[in-house]
Length: 271
Length: 212
Image (cartoon, rainbow over all chains, first blue to last red; front, side, top):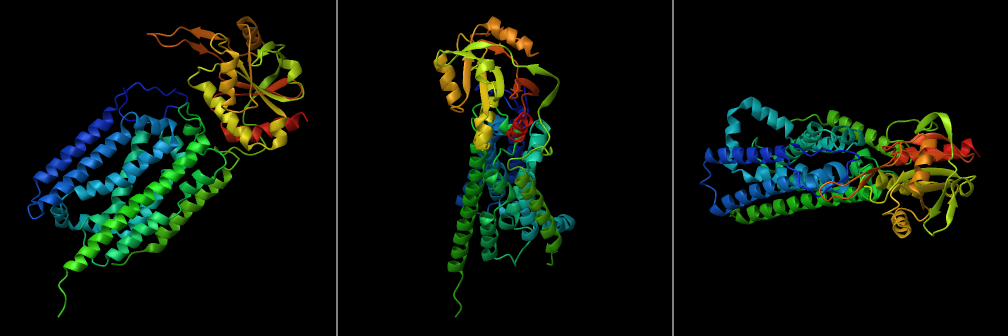
């Protein structure tokens, strides 16, 4: 029995279900932490619709994480198909972190202000410039062929890779979603530019996957079927990474733009 | 709030440059840092002579391995079409290699797939299975005695039939390595499972140039 999905080069794919205990434990842990944070937070000032939206965001995050990491997508992405691996990245590294941060009421973040050192560290770590670089370096490093081929064949390595994605995603979305620390200078227009830049940016892993003449990842090149042509699968993975992440970023742009417009229309007109 | 952007910019640029460099170097050359110009397969201490083997091709004709492949670089592999792991990987890798090779190298190279499961690998099935990978790949089948004798000549393990358990299909134990016979009929290099496309693309022109 395995606790986390990992690459097993040369092992034939089977549709026989296999339990991944670690994935379930992480899901249970996330639900427990969320319930605990909610029970300690007074979110009565938020509308019932907003509270419901936050629950839906959390449930969506948990469902997406579970579906992408558990059988069959987990083992398929870890060992057989780079394109599925990239779908996992979109979920674990981009979509789920945004949903998890959105799932918490604004008041849940306020206790962070009671810890000046933590606030300072968060201020530095999640500064938009720092977040931009941390996310992109993380994304580049965790898709580097040597790193993927080294980490994916072990459960611990695969877990570390997934955690790195999640942390990178949380840092990326933090300045856009979380109200602590205050960033009065980071206006909606700046947030839109931040997301748009990340949507358009051509990252090295994408270029490698699309333009390399040979498969760059040994684990997917040497994977038995369902992988048939490792190079085609790799190019599909590059397209999934680029188009998928751009769509998520653009969804973020739309949400920020809408909030901005609503805020502007609610603002009382000066006499 | 002030923030030092330059060190971060440098760090990211360095990471991007390194990855781009690695991406450029992986275009047709090694993925694992091996140098170009050296064989990446396992060089045999004692060369192996191409076995004197006459089998049946997928059109039903007799195929004399030595005569038909004389003057070609021949990549000989023993496997079966129901193989769940090693065979499809080798064939898919070699198909990708053939797409990438220069035409003169491709034309001088033959991939020979010898079935170790003649009962299930009918000529039709063998032909269709191989053509799904590359139209030039040749499929052969024959008596197991002759095949096992050839394997012994090539110092490769013989075929082992493993009965299926709980209703599952029979699996066939077979060598996982591909032997590369040069134009002179001698194999000096073998390619175990795990050899990558970039390794083949590096080695095949070298093997041809050794025996022009």
